[in-house]
Amino acid sequence: MKTSTRIASIDVFRALTMFLMIFVNDLWTLSGVPHWLEHAKIREDFLGFSDVIFPSFLFILGMSIPFAIENRMAKGESKPTIIKHIVFRSIALLVMGVFTVNYENLSSTIMNRDVFAMLMLAGFFLIWNIYPKKQNSSKYIFKGLQIIGIALLLFLAFIFRDAKGSIMQPKWWGILGLIGWTYLICALIYVFVRKNLKYQAIAWLLFVVLCMAGASHRLGIFDEILRGNGVFHAFTTGGVLLSLLFNRFSFKKLLPWLIVSGVLFIVFGKLSNYFWIISKIGETPPWLFYCTGISVLAYPLIYWLVDLKNKHSWFYSIGPAGTATLTCYLIPYWLDAIFSMTNFSLPAAWLIYPAGLLKCILLSFFCIGITWTLTKIGIKLKI
Image (cartoon, rainbow, N blue to C red; front, side, top):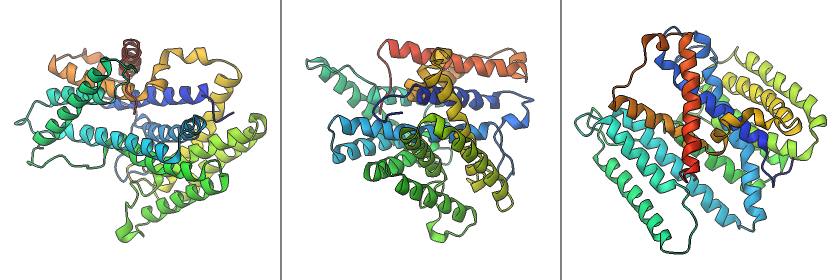
């Protein structure tokens, strides 16, 4: 595994997590869903299937970081240039996170929520779409579209008021914002320590210790000094470490150690459960250990199937979710707004488990299909 090439299994793993993220985010529309499929409730000592998806996405984000940064360095980009890219990419995610976490609380006296969502998404796509690289007058048109997108978001931020009359606030930053903060720290760490396994392991351990201290309420004024008290960063740094291990050792030598490590993480999850509950909302160590163990065990299987057995074609139907991930993530927001504005509804039978699961699966495929169509006509977000 070389850090200068694109690894198909990473794209597949990312596509699978995005497919499942759309799937689990739609489960709330159903009645009668088994609890094991859902998110655990606040202060509930439980790990639902839905609680595993976001950590897996953060883990695969970490696996991608060495490839992305090493590729930029191989092209001759300097550290300051790469750091600038990391910062601007993080800011983009934070902006989108703040908007998406606020719009549902928009006061109906300001603007219709669905209209706000459509304008918000239009702003995202105008600013961060991948425009063709041309040296003629077209480039001024593309710059103009980006300026329109920025002005649109500024306008929406200016007029926004929630039901209490408050302005737009970071709140918990939303999923995209959490990814932005996590990526910022972990990517900067990689820029400075790169392939040094020892320093990456130390960073991972510090994040784990911070998570434990936060879960034990021992951080005082330093609580949330890092969003999630390091738990999100631990997932991502774990992914960085796994990428570096794959780059350094053969799959045959690495596989037994990965199996043992994955099992040990699950054992650590069980042992730590004597001290803390398993809680995604609480961002606790058992959640960290269990989900890390699941990712460590899942990725080698995907790598073996996709990169060694050349079964990449098995995943073509969800491929766009792994290569145009941000676009795919935002499609459900478009659909929710459109369905709400048109009063679209499904028969009641499609909203009851187990038949409703088919609806959630089809929605994931539908969003990926829209993503594929958009990329074919030159619409794809990249930050």
